[in-house]
Image (cartoon, rainbow, N blue to C red; front, side, top):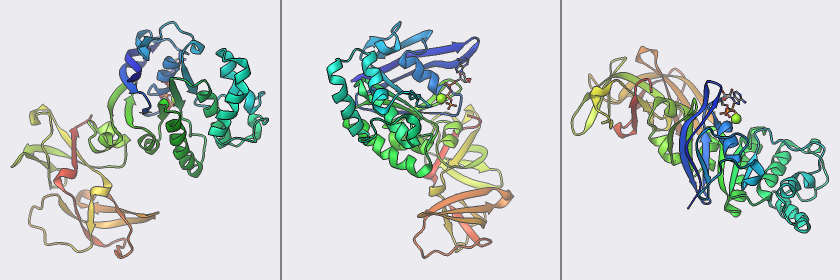
Length: 362
Ligand SMILES: Nc1ncnc2c1ncn2[C@@H]1O[C@H](COP(=O)(O)OP(=O)(O)OP(=O)(O)O)[C@@H](O)[C@H]1O
Ligand SMILES: [Mg+2]
């Protein structure tokens, strides 16, 4: 069931198009991650859904009802603002109760509901504190409790974890997911952290300059980006550019700059439609210490020299310089026995089906 649907929603500030004809739907209980660079229109989109801005064109539908003309408190939407916006003069309890009072929640039931929410976000014992007596993570939980208290049909979270340090952020990410699942919330979470978007969302919408550039499952977006922008925005990538030509058995071959031959899957659009770039994700690149005897014109294989090695947790990040000075990044699981060294001559290889082909300049 579609709980939230945006149909061709557009927002202008003067002549500036902040949100440009976007459409998407969120199913009951689903978490949609809205992702994109700063200024691309994420907060504006949430503000239109919550009713703080009016969409001039298009419609915001909640459970099949057009929200046009409804004030924020007349919409069954809970919004966690980018800066939390807790009321500094109110206690934790008063902050969480605020929305309930505003929406005429039965007065005698408010204390029980607030207690239920504080237990959900693990803040029992903090009832009488004010925001300036709480840590960033605790404030974030109060804001979450406040957003969820009215049992909204749609929950909007704008950068819910951005004020936290990396470790706390990761811990709270799992908690947040569990809390949202426990109340079957239909949620949009805005973030510009791509890992967070991939880990929280059942589906991902990527925006750029007010437009949706791709939407799909996290796996789809990572493994099958349709443009160079999406491929570069989501995850790390190595790029080859050059002329793409038809090859044997449904494959295409990139005559890449640097003289490399790279066999890739045939792109969906015609080869005559323009130039293409090829992306290989670092975890798909294989680095071997033993240089195999390459032929004269090896395919998807190149010689190189290791320029940098970094151990990042369980991963080994390698930077290899190939002909023409191009740097290739490779990541592999560190399992102890491979001893690569900076300056070492290596072979870099990857499979044709691990190459992602996108239109040049996309
Ligand atoms: N009230 C306003 N008047 C004029 N322009 C605005 C207004 N609010 C936002 N904008 C512009 O609209 C664009 C989108 O802003 P928005 O806040 O939606 O971006 P965002 O994607 O949330 O960015 P960030 O990741 O930095 O929070 C920006 O260029 C911003 O400057
Ligand atoms: Mg924003």
